[in-house]
Image (cartoon, rainbow, N blue to C red; front, side, top):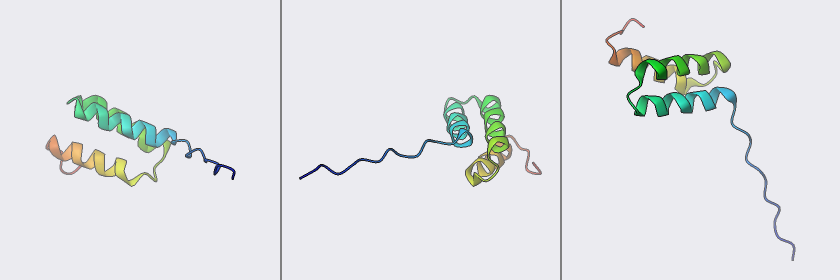
Length: 67
């Protein structure tokens, strides 16, 4: 019996990769760099809702509620 063929997972989009980098930067308390990377992510793919939430949360933490 032949072994089932394994599919490669789809490649991560540049926007999602930048978002993940932003999250890693924030985890290291590098807030300004994290926000810059998240803004890059939003520019690459504005359909990633998580990045918009991420930016809003960062701005809220910095006291910038109007955004």
